Amino acid sequence: MDDHQDQHGQRKIRLDKLARLKELGVNPYPYSFQPTHRAAALLEQGDSLVESGEKVSAAGRLMALRDMGKAAFAHIKDNHQRLQIYLRKDAVGDGAFEVFGLCDLGDYVGLTGTMMRTKTGELTLRVEQLELLAKAIRPLPVPKVEVRDGEQVVHNEVRDVEFRYRQRYADLALNDEVAKVFLGRSRILGVVRDYLAGQGYLEVETPILQGIYGGAAASPFTTHHKALNIPLYLRIATELYLKRLVVGGFDRVFEIGKDFRNEGIDRLHNPEFTMVEFYQAYADYNVMMEHFEAIYEQCALEVHGGTAFTFQGTALDVKRPWRRITMTDALRELGQVDFPALSDEEVRSLLQTHHIEPAGGYNRGLAMAALFEALCEEKLVQPTFILDFPKETTPLCKQHREHPELVERFEPYMAGWELGNAYSELNDPQVQKALLQEQAALRQSGDQEAHPYDADFIRAMEYGMPPMGGVGLGIDRMVMLLLDQPSIRDVLLFPTMRPEAGLEE
View 1 (cartoon, one colour):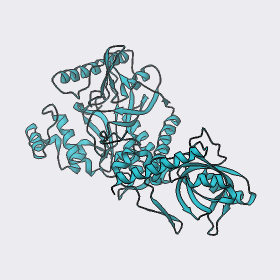
View 2: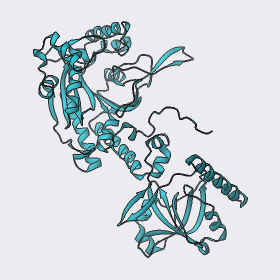
View 3: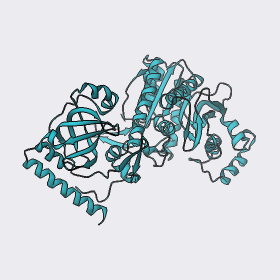
View 4: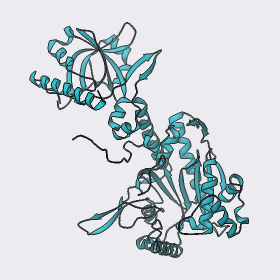
């Protein structure tokens, strides 16, 4: 019998039980239940509750069941915490015991009773009253959990990633380790938010639907607004709206939110992803480096209790200060390329040797960045800031104060990945206008990732924009690193997937 037939048969059995429950006058989907305690609190306060004999109520999903005839042991899971329960027919009554006999793994139940310890010393809820809260008519592929020497050992754990990503609700219900990842993600986001608020930043919300997208070199998702009869784009970055707010007098602003880019999918990229961008008036990229490394350090302390941790077998340490090295020096040290000494012909030859074709044809600055990406990125294992990019890499960054062919930009790296992006932000409206006009010309010539011209942003700058530093920090990659997850899909609750073929209605 294949899995589909087996699932269909089990579902039929559950539907028959559902019909029987209704015949008994049981509402299998009541409106509410009021627990007095969560499972974790019952275990934490267990001994005092055993001693006092206090009546308590708890609710959760049935995850294990051992039928002993006129009695039964079972486990419920409440907020990813397991609690053992014990029922006797003579304690709950014939009717409630029959209802329990019609329950299956995956059902939600509400229980009232007193706490006790079993002969093996396990804290257990001795049930006196039982209420079915939700009948599950589709069986979960529940793994077998054995407690061995005080540790949970999981047998037949659901490991099929296609199943796990598509049915995250089932994945979370079954796999406590997966739930821990997303609880950890929430803690990390809380640290980021608290750090920025503690530094005087104001949290804001800017438009997701935008008439002109900008702030990155990326392809947008497009839609159409019927009432206004205009095209709109899902934002690719929050940068330009946050800078408008600095013009408006909010000296320090940040936003944690989704960005969307109509690009490829791999272990580091998903079409929608979470970024935090923050901008600080009167600062430059040196100040923003200090914020960046401080955020990583505090997040590591939150989830690990220290700055050192392991990612996929590699030991990492985010303790401040991180190494700082220019792109030119990184190419020289890691790629054995002395870029300033090369002629254009030698640069072209290197590009051919490494099968690199910069978009838009040959450009010396873009060629330098492409060579760095090909020859150096994967060698940047410990936390490192790469500084001072060619000016051709961005139209939104201030020219380097000592090297006019460069801009004051940094990208942080770890485990061979780029973790974010930051500038000493350009605040000269005339220079910005000229650079965006150049980008618009590139778009007209076919470069669809060139930055569109944004006349309103230029108007905002003309009112006066203070010098500032800005940062974009990728939340998903930070969570991957700190929680040792190999793919971005492992840290997104619902990653983007192809439509599922053959899904029954």
